[in-house]
Length: 80
Image (cartoon, rainbow, N blue to C red; front, side):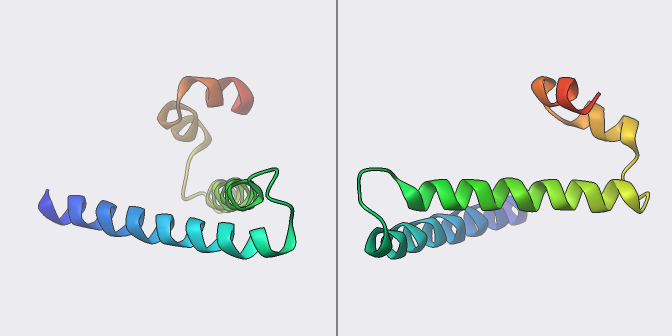
């Protein structure tokens, strides 16, 4: 259990640092009126999650019925 907690902490810390770096870099190129760094990170994350789900379901590693039941309820409506 502690190993899993440590892995989650490392992943969360790495994600936070990367989000901060993207925000700092994007503030150099865009006006600071809108949080572009957060927007870029969120859109990229959504794209990667969608790509992974598509690949896993295409190659049979993830059954469609299993996928629908593992996701939170609003996702079930989109998937079904």
